Image 1: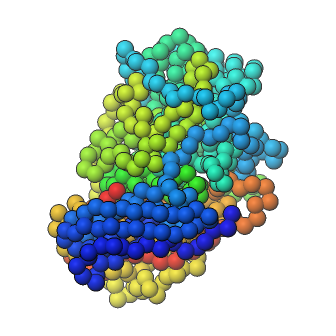
Image 2: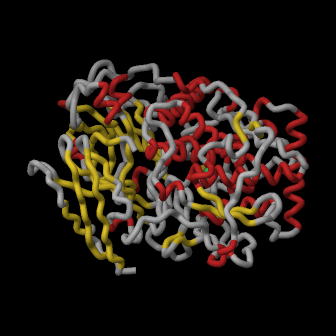
Image 3: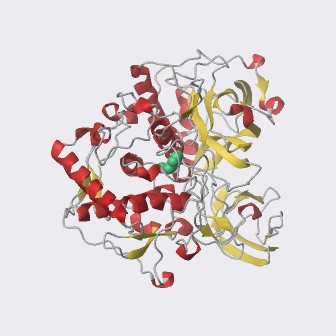
Length: 596
Ligand SMILES: O=C1C=CC=CC1=O
Ligand SMILES: [Cu+2]
């Protein structure tokens, strides 16, 4: 599909009072108006893109600078969405379900398509049945033997249904749901559908677990049955829950990394780079990561949920903080790693948990995602600007599932925002990470900026094969609390390019130098990490180059903690952990961004 590379032409018929008023596309679906004070505006954009005539007009009044204007139907060409109108992601058309494409997986064609209803168009919208009693999901490390026996029985009954490979309630068919939605089996317009690396991540997995749990309950005739959550955000849950590690049990999976079996403390940042440290430090690192991903780096909805993903969008627009870490590292830590006979073990899509197509074949997947889902509730409970997105393209996106009666249903994101309304909740467990601000300040005072190159001399960076340290200007200093409440200070890495057949991870520190020990992230200067999984590619897909527009880290709180708020220039250090040699970064800047 030929696509023009220019953005639609927009003109403002706006009685702006001064020449400083201008506008620009800062995100494909958002237009920023640089304006001051109160004023009315009318922006009309006309343009043509791929045969779609665009006519979008938005009127209104703005009352502050840098207003964020969501021009409903307007997209920048980079989004490749139909410019005539924005649209939510529709449910997959099962008739177009095709073979999965899998990296490092089976070489033979692998199908994970579910049985197709006769008439897809007549599949109705699901209505959540009334529940007399909430199902309460327990922390996996605290359940009784009786509960474990019940869960084992339900899972073995589900596995027995595999005797009919087309029974939608079978264990393999249930695992194939994840494969179909993640390994290119479904298309969306002329793109492949992928529910990871975007704002669909949380709602898709919530609906997925909702039906999985109800099917298990129906198999043991217990509508109150609730999945256990792998409580990896609490020190007592930072190991593989014992119930999954009993050989011969229906909850066991032989295809796991051997290190999960001896009660090893999990590394919630694992990307194949074994951190050499002791258990206490690992638990500390894990709690620091949880604090950064739930609090420091996720003050705003899009930073938590992930980037917009609409009808026609390319897959993988960008992941939220929790999908990034700890969700993906838990997958990779649990899945097998391939070791050469020289003992060089690297994660390489290790089944089951480490590969999209097979992750659901490990029963612990559903407990892992139960805790990911619990983080959605915990994040909103933190308050501030932490709330659900209000974009209708998110709210009206849809998925398709079979229920416990083998009936096909369409479901919407907007109907899964409140787990209690869906009939389940989580048994409470302490969240020690809430107050676990990094304690140590590694760099006394300020890094000596005279010995550090400015970002303009370091970027564009052709590869990240070693730690780099650079200085960068801030857009404002000594910001008032009101300004900090209104605009988040964000460190943004622009146009990352890399070979996405590789695992990528790098850590970011503010006001630390290149000698910083990245295995001990209990330091105020640790800002966060970028991670990327190898993405699946079809056969003969050739070049695996991918370009990620932005990687953002919210640093308002970190600057406060490090006593840097009055500095107009700060030092940033980037430490490669996995795959840095194939990463290039075009530029880095610090910007003030509206929290949306
Ligand atoms: O979401 C996933 C991330 C990594 C590997 C498998 C998954 O399902
Ligand atoms: Cu997952």
